[in-house]
Image (cartoon, rainbow, N blue to C red; front, side, top):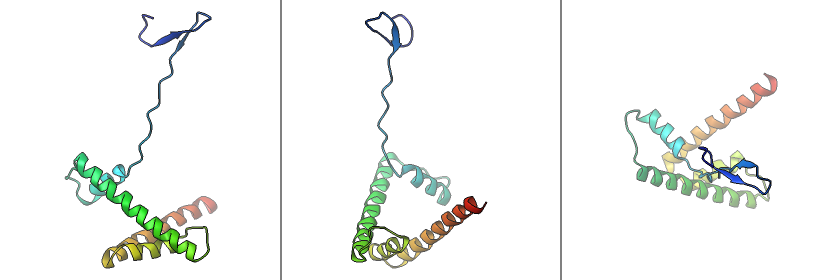
Length: 123
């Protein structure tokens, strides 16, 4: 047991390395928020408290939009959330100009995604 690695002894007197415990992954939007911050203001940083607030904000907004889209899909007697339900939910949850910008960015992202799928399929 003088080696640098941790070993345990078994009944057969053979040494096995102890397995390391994996850290539980914490899901967060912080890397995406940071990437957007870099695009908008490359020289500005963000504190961990501010990042936690932004992460909570994005999580809350996501939950509101998904809940509204879920209600809309139930009205239509459908079990599938489509881009149309998400778009309508964004219009209902967000106000005026923010909703318009969000919808245009979302439409652009969906179009980019679909074109990448077409390139893979026919590519």
